[in-house]
Length: 126
Image 1 (cartoon, one colour):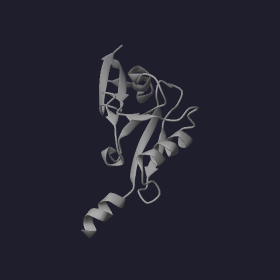
Image 2: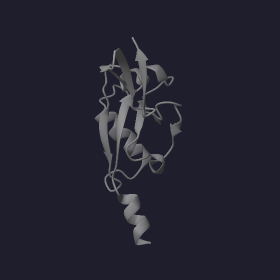
Image 3: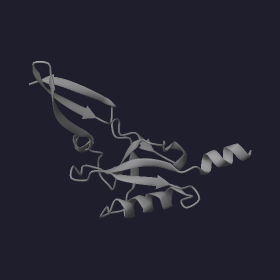
Image 4: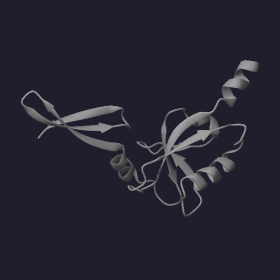
């Protein structure tokens, strides 16, 4: 029906990272289904947008490295990793997603690591 069509055409926004590239801070990508209709054209757009040297061949989830196979599997507001060729490198991605901050908490100097993959933060006493 009309609703299903609108839902499918609604743009999805997510962040793309480059496999193993710790210097790359991620690229916001807006997937408009009227502009990008096929998986191949999506991979081409990702290659261009992330300025990958080689063609992006697969899109993976950051933590498990699960391969995304089609446009419908892409979730709004998620993070994904663009893989050109070769093995998926999990560590490189985890590093760039971690942002460290120092905060004062009572008498402790606390070091907090905010990790936006897991949506959690881990507090460690220094």
